[in-house]
Amino acid sequence: MHAAFDGDSIVGGAGAFPFELTIPGRQLRCGGVTVVGVLPTHRRRGVLTSMMRAQLEDIRDRGEPLAALWASEEAIYRRYGYGMAALGAELTLARGYHALRPPANPEVSVRLVSLDDAKELVPPIYDRTRLRTPGMYARSPEWWETRILDDPPDRREEGAAKNVAIVDLDGVPSAYALYRVVSKWEGAANVGHVRVIEAMGDDGAELELWRYLLGLDWVGNFRANHLPIGHPLLHALVYPRRALLRLYDTLFLRLVDVGTALAARSYASEEPLVLELDDEFLPENSGRWRIADGVAERTDDDADLALDVTEAGSLYLGAFGASELVRAGLVHELREGAAARADRLFAVPRKPWCPEIF
Ligand SMILES: CC(C)(COP(=O)(O)OP(=O)(O)OC[C@H]1O[C@@H](n2cnc3c(N)ncnc32)[C@H](O)[C@@H]1OP(=O)(O)O)[C@@H](O)C(=O)NCCC(=O)NCCS
Image (cartoon, rainbow, N blue to C red; front, side, top):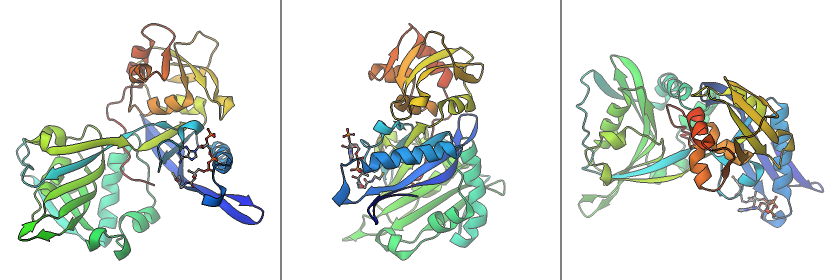
């Protein structure tokens, strides 16, 4: 935690968790920025800016080449070099439209377990998903216990308890869902909903998990937040149009040590690319960077693309292509075909996903 002082009084604070974040090809240390606030009596005087500077310097000195956050207001953090790095989807599906096109897998069974038993069963499934998904981070046992697998009554949506369903595939726990059934009746009709808090699993088990969830009775609809882009449900549902999907920004990412961060991720092509990078907030990152054969280093070569470090944060996990950012007027092509080359270089097999606000 950092605190900002006015005399002896604390007037602002900012925290950061030490994360292991999955990036394309591996895990990398990352500052997980959280609980940022300035007292209403001291706002718009630069307190946040000075805390962000102190915090990023600390993150860099701890050897974390990246910083990440969820923004309570999306307009705040780009000025500090955080780029929109992953999208999420909110799903609402009316009951009755849950039929799936692929036939049910007879090898699969579903069971309900207690939150206590979930402590053994759920983290390994999360970890398998995490290790192949850019944007996810490792959870400590304390994180699991106090944030995920507890259910204090004051945090329940309309009093509905947290349930845990496990999908076993060939006898192996392979997918899990944390969810609540919020019951409500109007006259004789069910108008409540199932709130899916978190659901994920191995290929082959994940869809069966959703088959189970969307088949639950006594509700009017199914709701889930922070689903990944490219969710298999979109293809598997017989009525995808009935799945109301709203996209929104989730994870913001900041390249704190640009050289280390660029060199750490894997690339999908071997074509070289030279970036002319501008970083006003941490000027030591500014300059020309050449990415080639999995190495990123400073160069005097002519640049292919010019961009701010904020946009480098948007490219890094593979959520967006350079061509999209060129069309948005935020990345500038200095050599014809450079954006398409960057698209190929930064491409990822699985879009980044961050399933949890931290
Ligand atoms: C958001 C918050 C931390 C900003 O703190 P602050 O000390 O007033 O910010 P600063 O004075 O350092 O402002 C720096 C810049 O950000 C801008 N800014 C600050 N808050 C902003 C907001 N909510 N939306 C858009 N821009 C904002 C300022 O206008 C200023 O811009 P400038 O440099 O172009 O003049 C503070 O308003 C707050 O605590 N809000 C409620 C809690 C919250 O939203 N926290 C963020 C959690 S993710």
